Figure 1 (tube, rainbow, N blue to C red):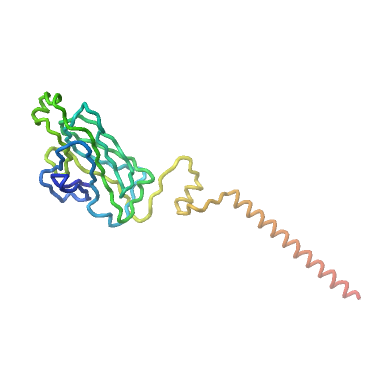
Figure 2 (cartoon, one colour):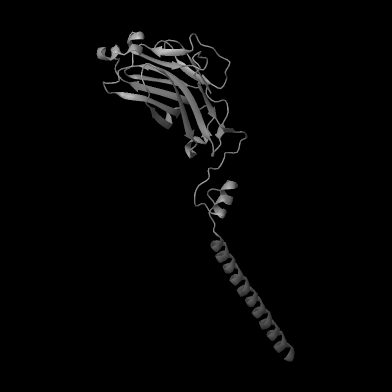
Length: 243
């Protein structure tokens, strides 16, 4: 998954798709403020077919940022969410120095809720940050003074020239059969049932044995009844013959 968008995030949009064949104006998009930042980068077009992820794998996302904000006035650090449409599947907070380009790596273990991505669903990254711009007393530091101590929130795109890696990797399983997530404490019988897709079938061996026993008893009773009827008929015929 690659990240693309417009240079001015307030005027344009941010999006992703599964092709590196794209280019942007500057290799990044930015706001000229740092408080109440909240935007999304959805898949450019919804999924064209169902997608199944490896239950033993992970989703690996790498992003690049430059944030010029106050470090002394509180607020909320960078929060990134992975969403499927409006559903939040994973969320992580990242803290790093201001006024410097930062590479972040986010490894998300695949959970049961992430296994199946239905056709027409939309993988989306949501980015949130909320801190005021740098204060005057903070601007004495050389690197901040060199940057004119201006507030800035910048996200880098996949074609940036800063050497930052911006991409996401989804470990997709080919085929139309959804994978089974391994669970602790699952018996062999349950695993076999699950592997054949009979999740609603839950018949134990003891139950089958009980049913077989009942059928056997009924069979013996019917056999004894038939034998008794046969003997009775034979006795009646013998008496008739003696008469």
